Image 1 (cartoon, rainbow, N blue to C red):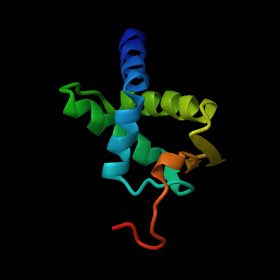
Image 2 (cartoon, one colour):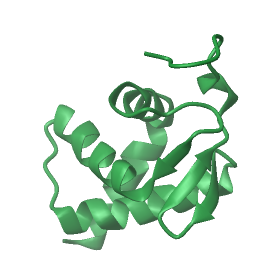
Image 3 (cartoon, one colour):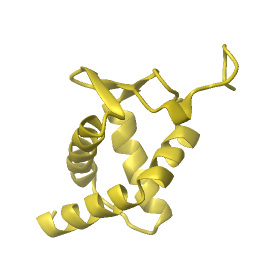
Image 4 (cartoon, one colour):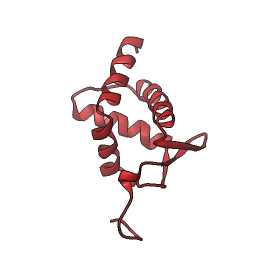
Length: 102
């Protein structure tokens, strides 16, 4: 795993931030003020990149999850609540109806 690859993948995820967040929302139960877990971010990154025909290792996914978690924390989209999770602070993901969104 090269630093260059990690940097380019991080840049890609940050550039496609909106579509990446929408992808996560479609794949996982991600809503405004909901919990979101590190492992979901890790698997979401792998799946998102695979859709772009980019195949990464679990180690690379782990490093990218660390970097993207910190990135979303700095932007205020994720609020850290534990070592392995965040609260989603993204009002665009608010549900209009209370209860089960499915």
